[in-house]
Length: 295
Image: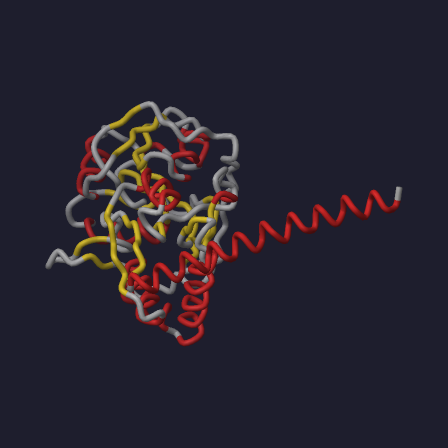
């Protein structure tokens, strides 16, 4: 009986070892391809101010973009960006179309075990933008019930809105102006999203649209990272080392302060918040219209 047990146990260990070796060799092999190519292929939205957007000269820039460019410099590789909607990024990573997705998977995402994630480079929490005149009739998260929430499909923000009973109005790839105009005109009532992104967006249009962040109504803190295929373990390790080095030498903080008006998003902020469980929320919303807001 003991011999049989040890034989089975040995076979299991051997299988685990073979899988580990296979994964490692695949990661190393893919890294060699990247080195030979001389570039890392990255999927990014290009519409997410101030993280990935086009400046006045139409150059792709932003917090995330500049981090990736710095990572490329440290790895002595060029960064080739492909702009696409967030819905297609995970597929692009899995298919090998790109090596990195500028798309963050949270811990409670059902796909999180199907991908690799980088060292976090941003910490934030969830807030909401409402009409300045009446707070869109919202004084707590429970007040989202029956309200029209604007945002991008399949995001954690829209899941929060859906969980709280809001009607989802989904946009594809338009500017913040479209979102704000619809909010002010009453076509929508609220935009649930990242606090720092909303703070920047509201500040940029404060003289044009009477909207505001609904102060003190926050939820679900989280971290942001880049996403890789399971086959790119070596690339993940290289990127992680570069990000950690950037944290240590202050480069990451400098990039953050440049794009977030002096704010350091590389460190956690202590705020009072409501934890909203969205693990049981389906990501397919019923209503679709024009554009992508914050991300």
